[in-house]
Length: 311
Length: 311
Image (cartoon, rainbow over all chains, first blue to last red; front, side, top):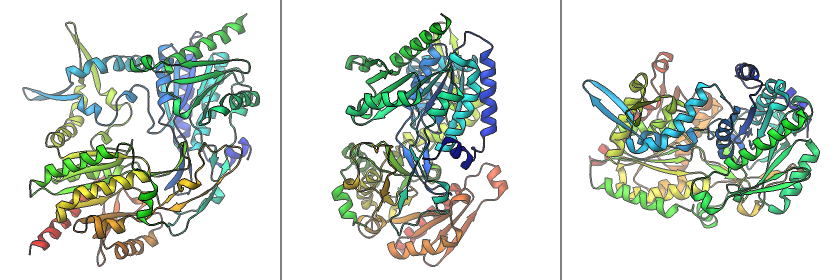
């Protein structure tokens, strides 16, 4: 595995990097003026690792962005300013509730005199109104910033820029790293220039992506409350691997989950404690999302962390 | 490369396969009653090839679904009934014009008396109205069927089911195969059960996906007008590879394009002719999409093919 310095040195920033860095800076400078304003960086969705320079094929990570996009809504509800760093086309807060044609199906055309109007069908207003109201509140109070990425290299550049902007918040900054970041990538030098021809059966040699939590926790935002996620498919490894991660990176909390049960069970793991959040079938059927208690518990722990510092 | 029979024998159909097969059957049985009704299958978006049984990682093909989703709209405009077989979350006809928060930003809340209404802002009505009108026309005339897939194996199962439903249309059926289908997959037996651990740097051995055009053209829909796509990054190979494909599979037309220029240039290749469709900068700036002339030319050739049969 190369070092993280090598990775940045050998990968160019994304083309719109400077624009995004400015947006991050402005957003943070606006909110830091209010000394009671907490702020969270939510990362969401999977990153891709291209297999070719002119990218036709890439290795992707499974992630629709459900966890990150719903959590962002609950952080807004808990009065956080939210930087939502997400994979292009993955789920986003508020719009995530509607897919495909659902938006168009909610609309009806009415003609009065010579003008056409388009309005939401009365039977859809009940569903849409609370979501739209929350969205407009977030927009009007400028408490939600969207920044998007596609490749693992884009992600790492934007993550570092976000940390630079967040560092002045010190302990008030919360990092909620829910994105499914590629562990592997194909080094630029090993990448064919053109599309791999389908006559052969290629073997792809993958390299490990450097573990970015290390410099993030120790150097970039050393005072922040950092929460990472651990997704496994094998339950027997879950807690041990979470503890291993906490020991290695020295951050505050791992939210551990198993692929198959992640919608109704997570475990909040610290070096000395583990607390399960479990949703019953009844809760799930009534429309409760597990991200509501998760975010509520994370905010509580962040508050305790802030209060601890003041004593 | 295994045979296509082996591929179906070793991959289970997707879980909702029977429902989709019924939808395809009903849609085709409805439209075949009108003997002047042409029908097209548009495939769109990329397929994935999972790397693990409990899929966390997969190899994906680059495709947003732009070509397929816009073409589907133009086929509707040319009075075709359209089966839109698309990758989950890729672009869809009509909704493709709006991304992310654009839908929510178009809406405003108005309160009169005790009721809340939601309507489209007057300055957005002009943009939305023609799109919404076309969408509603397609829905009301039942001329658009959406079927979606994720993995290459889902795609192959649904493609064959669509062909079975389309076969009775004989020459009236047009197949417009714009999906970016994986060339490679990891055989089930070589796949690890659990997530690949990130301590090692795995080598992934890929197998070739069987070329499904062969049985499709020769056996499944032997009378249909079949159009395939060829995407390359190297211009020097484009026409030769298209001709090679036409010789091998014996279908009617290859639409050839280069990744970097695909939005404003394609070449329509037959065994004996090649015709370029090129958009000028002015046409592109005025909002013309290249799929409009492409689909119009394909429909013309399909009409000629139908007329030829009657002579």
